[in-house]
Length: 458
Ligand SMILES: *Cc1c(COP(=O)(O)O)cnc(C)c1O
Image: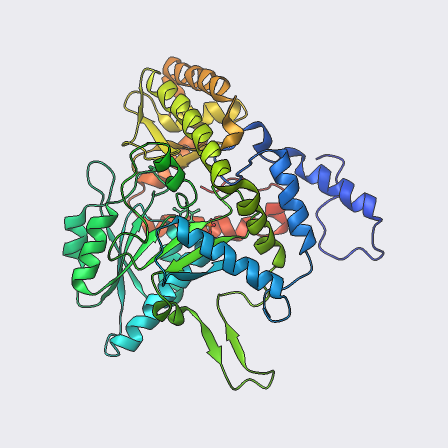
């Protein structure tokens, strides 16, 4: 990036020629993670150049349109309703099922938690401090929602199979509980929580039950159809009242697309926001955002329509085949161990013999973008079509990385591994929070843009 001018803090006095702006952006991205070569295992879901070209065309076709006012752009309204309907039919929704699109998994989850909070406010007006019970493996979006919405998150441990311990969930329910949560699958270990048992418990106690299928929603139905064992997890399970599924993950849509589905419209009403007294007019809004980009809706619709059931099945077959190659290859490397029994294409592995965080560093030095986990320390993988063909290169580098760490035990606990391991083990979690806050503060500044701080979240 040496040819780049220093970071800018002011508008250029005269606008730069378009070619120059584009050149600078190309230059800025030269050191970004190489997702195209299958070197990343999260963040980008790439289903090939042809598919990508269609998504871009669809996005550009509706580049200007705004789903804020659905009566102005009937096309977007229709596409959104069709996307929701296709998702609901894929995910066990009955005739009453409904939902909305949102900008992503986090928004879908935020909306669901808001829905249950407002449902509880209406049903149980005396309840002042609502709680939701969720597995420790549930996505942080629930904690974010809790934080934003004034709902207390009560975390429950996992059983030995890394699925949530249903007895612990039962024990965590109090008179203030409004919602139970399970994941299909959970991000850290890729295993599906015991949804039928959780949903039965929710039903018995009159609680909401949200299934976070952000990761699995557009993959598990096809994985099951291919003959892999997939336990019941969707809206067809009695007691499941809502579900989130990300189109921009295994739905292979453009970023900014997810669905949140509800068992019925009576529940979804609590998601909507209305104000009737604004001088700017009557105002009703289905989701968090005001302006809603038409491109994301259009690209999601294009992804579903162009891929079709058979296309998703073929892709699922390929993803599962590639996942198996990774899983078997990792298991065959002495000293490595996959955590639990992953239900699809997401998993983590650790080691009882070498410092796995040092292995992560050695892999990173070989050009892989590594996702690190804690409790226990592990390396996380999420397999997409981009990983077909890189299995052997990854496994060879992984094997070499393990050998390197084994040969140089003195390097364990150094570098990134040391920092990450220390943060994970530090008993004072308040201090860890403070460090992360400081890190964010530094990152979102021009110094952060200069690369003055590490470019990876701790
Ligand atoms: C990705 C993910 C989310 C959050 O989705 P975003 O689109 O990143 O906001 C929620 N739950 C699970 C299980 C996820 O993998």
